[in-house]
Amino acid sequence: MSKTIYILNGPNLNLLGQRQPEIYGRETLADVERLCADVATPAGFTVRLMQTNHEGQMIDWIHAARHEAAAIVINPAAWTHTSVALLDALHTFEGPVIEVHISNVHKREEFRHHSYVSLRADGVIAGLGIEGYALAVRRVCSLLG
Image 1 (cartoon, rainbow, N blue to C red):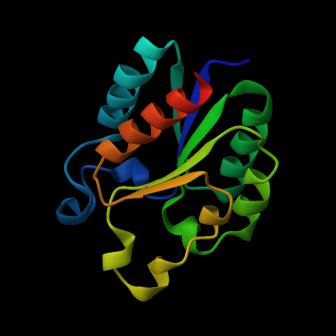
Image 2: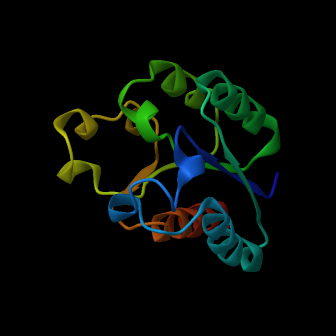
C-alpha cells in the first residue's frame, strides 16, 4: 500500500496568507505542507501537497491518487459548493477522504453551507484554521495504521 497522503487544494488557495487574512489567516500553503509533514512523517507517511485553480486538474489528481495515494485530504474551496464532477471523481477513490475548510463555512454565506464533497468524505473539519489539515492527516494516519 502507498504511504503517500495527497493534500489537494482548490481555487484561490495559492493566495493563502495574502487573500482575506481576516478569514483565512496569514499562514501559507508552505506552512500547511510543513504542518502536515510534521504529523505524517513520524507515522511513516509522506505528504504531497498540490493546488490548482483548474477543476479538470483536480479531477486528474484524484484519478492519479487511485494508484499513488493511501488517502486524500482535500480543501476543494469554492468547488465544495458547486462540483458534482469532484464528487464523482472522489467516488472512484477507495481510500479515506477528509474534507478540510480553513474557515467555518457554517458561519458564512448560506450557499457555503452545502457541500457536494461531504457526500463522499469520511470526515469534515471546518473552522480550525490550517490546524484542520494536521488533524485530517492525523486521522488518516490513524485509520491506515
